[in-house]
Image (cartoon, rainbow, N blue to C red; front, side):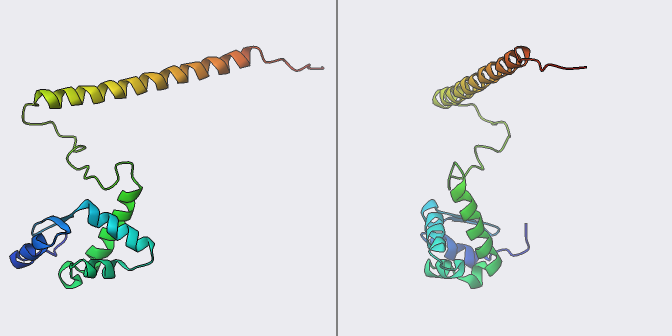
Length: 147
């Protein structure tokens, strides 16, 4: 992390902005609609600083580096399959410390079943392709070799 922390007054100001989901002394989480707005406006040729200023997020509080990096991160997120969805909670790799509810357990098992089905289809296709290559190499006509 950097050394540019927000004061309590700045955190209060940032949390009052409708484009900010949550702000702490160290970080800001923006709403998805704001991220999408930033990407759309940037693609129209506007500068990130102008977009943030128009949204009520002062560059004097955020700093130009944070604004530029946020805009860059939003553009990368827009290209992902998940889009702007926050994936930090779903891909942390840490085991849950609480018991899953029945609905959560069913959802997790359904996702695992779908993954295994796709993996099985992939392996079957790979086996088919390997058999095809072997078959072609066995029946490949040999060239007449003249000594």
